[in-house]
Amino acid sequence: MADLDVTPDVTARPLGDPLVVLSHVNKHFGDLHVLKDIDLTVHRGEVVVVIGPSGSGKSTLCRTINRLETIDSGTIRIDGTELPEEGKALARLRADVGMVFQSFNLFAHKSVLENVTLGPTKVKGMSRADARTKATSLLERVGVGNQADKLPAQLSGGQQQRVAIARALAMDPQVMLFDEPTSALDPEMINEVLDVMVSLAREGMTMIVVTHEMGFARRAAHRVVFMDGGQIVEEADPETFFTAPRSDRARDFLSKIL
Ligand code: ADP
Ligand code: MG
Image (cartoon, rainbow, N blue to C red; front, side):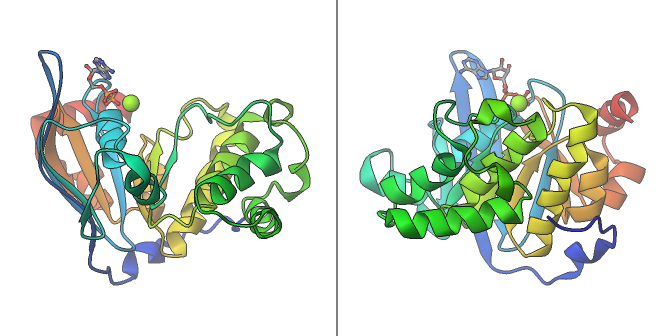
């Protein structure tokens, strides 16, 4: 795991070409218009933090990006390719998008190591031996190398979430989505997960992170996207957003969480 490093040089790197491009994306749940004409471009190497009130559509946004949810109109492209509706092509493209949820979602009856080897062997056809080697090094990297043979329930929440990150990384994703990855954790475990995420950002991983952890946004984000009522209301670099939000809705939201 990375040393705690508060230098803001993550955001000093030049960004690459557009990697995730949402264009005029609309999504309804019945009568509820949950995503309203969303346009969002995330560049290679960029870290975007998405914040906003509960129910504003942040999770739905994440879930549409890897087709856990369908969209009603608009397009979502990953590395230039629109996600297919289903089938093998979807499974392959989904592997490009790693996802980490609030509630770790590890396979309870498989060891930590198996949780990380399963995707590469089943979806990518990697040999068991290669998958184990890769998983072992990823588990080391997130600081849980000595927990490989345990079951998820034998680990702390912070350790489980770091396993979930390793599991997502095992698929060699082009972009990582995090949906409130620390909000189910006891306070003392939040930083061990955020530190792993900051180190990923420093290594140049493209990341979309739903979080209210301002510290993370300040340390690692190029851009903060503020959502409310299914819309992107405002976006800015973290310093500008937190110190000088432009919209009333963002000001109101910040006054409640800061
Ligand atoms: P956030 O993550 O910002 O809290 P969500 O994306 O989870 O917001 O939810 C946005 C809105 O969509 C909320 O009003 C929520 O109740 C609704 N919603 C989310 N998922 C579903 C679903 N599967 N069926 C119906 N409504 C949903
Ligand atoms: Mg949510």
